[in-house]
Length: 116
Image (cartoon, rainbow, N blue to C red; front, top):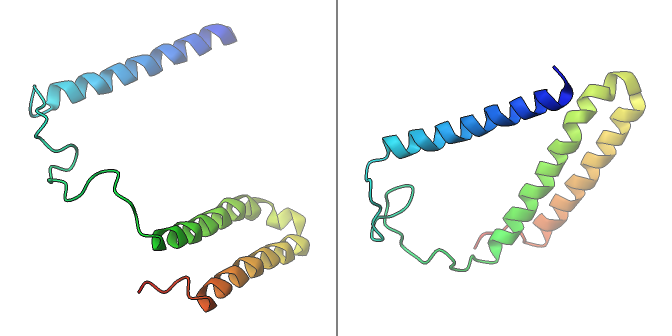
């Protein structure tokens, strides 16, 4: 099978899978005609508008999450090469973690992690 034929067959299988999922969702839904009064997804009535503003404190929480998420993005590949690279890789990772910890300590001292 040539590469082009394999790519087209994989595309066909993916299209059939998407069509199958949409068909199953259509066949298994509760209401055949959605009404505008019916809440979407969870079934709970919304208590505020969907585009309401978030408090500025959520920005700090988001930045901390992104910092630690990026830490994991860098640590997973590091675990694969640490045995090959030796002590230099361990030192570099501890320097990286120290910089991250310094940022968290600075945010803590400035009161950025205080919720009230």
